[in-house]
Image (cartoon, rainbow, N blue to C red; front, side, top):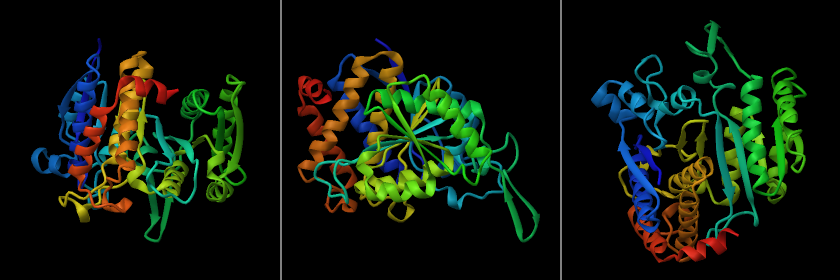
Length: 367
């Protein structure tokens, strides 16, 4: 039996509240699956780490992460970080680059008991995570934005064949286990070289997956199609900033960012992280929705199971998702979903639902 070392990084704002509920759920699913062994290692990150250790991402945290199999990261309030302070880095972007977490997997689907604008939505956006337009990922050293004059800014965008191909591989592998369809999103009619290289890389990988249908769309047109017939899309593969925007749009189709999980996936490490922000205006009020962070941990278990051929981890992931469904069906929801449950009350009810599920139910449900 493999013991998975899981780093726990609470982050800023509502991060500590939703991460604590996530750990509560992970501990419960570990009790439910005795052959699943998880060890938790709390590590400092974010504003509290800056106050105590002088850095939003201390060296000790980076070193400790090398000994872990995966991590759970809460949201961080980067918009108030001092950009000229080298000790106030964006932990999220830095970890993605430093640990080479090149694929950002962001599912969006309908959940029972949560009214959405559409039915039968079930898509996964696979977003490149380590390069692209964002300044903290576009250069090895320094800032990826340049001001040649006080009134002019030039921002660099990086697209490489290596990053594009390995991202596409994750997308096509995922599609093989889903509805066997991949949509490649780009703006090749204008960004001919950058998006052209990305699309060509995806097409090369597509040749290895003859049973997966592949199509491609311009980002602007696809945004319209998503709000017309989102149920027709399965796996969506795209570059960094396009994927960041589209995943928020997809979340809005099914009930909001409170239901939008994310997993930053690399070859040797993975980081569970909800797609939403730190919501500092409601921090400490015990009203934040923990579902996205909990489902991010569910994705983490699922991929640990896939990578290690560990059926217990895959079963544990399915248990969590089923428990989320049953909790919502019971009408236990936080305020953003129209309910009145606190963060802690939702987590407690989810644990109760999880403990009442029979393993054989999960096997049938997975099929």
